[in-house]
Length: 225
Image (cartoon, rainbow, N blue to C red):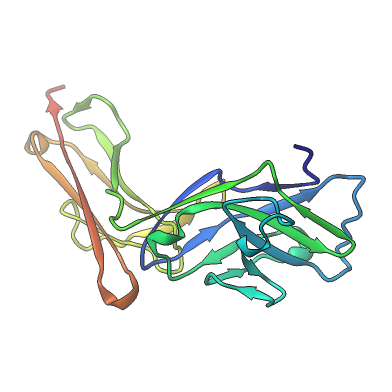
């Protein structure tokens, strides 16, 4: 397959039904092709099949306004080759393979070699707990982090844990343009922490005010120095 358009985006993404998905995306055209940022540029998302001529009905969104079957919005600046997209009001029926297409007449191309697999789940992901040291010993200072996938940074999960009930979680951007929400606490270990069960919950806001929650637990094992 000879593609004239390439996108930099995750290959696979997961999202939660009733929430949204931020798709980080940048594109490049072949150097010899005539993409011109001064011309009007439209972004198109197609599902299932990259062959526009064969399946034009597979177009689910066109930023020109001609097609808006799915609740998508290109938030990036296409003239700067940023195709970042917000996919809202997700349902499990939106699970599919998607292809991005640029219309910058007369330059028109589809990123044939860069499909994006989106899977929409009904159940949230359990958060993960990470401890900065492997072998835990008394009087050792460690950093404990609870982190949760954040496909929809506009409506991030609320993290709570028993380590410090008044902690405030923060959402940060990862190097690939996706987001993670974290709680972090530094503690000095003592013998009382041996056998202590850390419990962290991630509550995701979804449409209709019905929150979805998942929990993770991890037990500390602290040895004498």
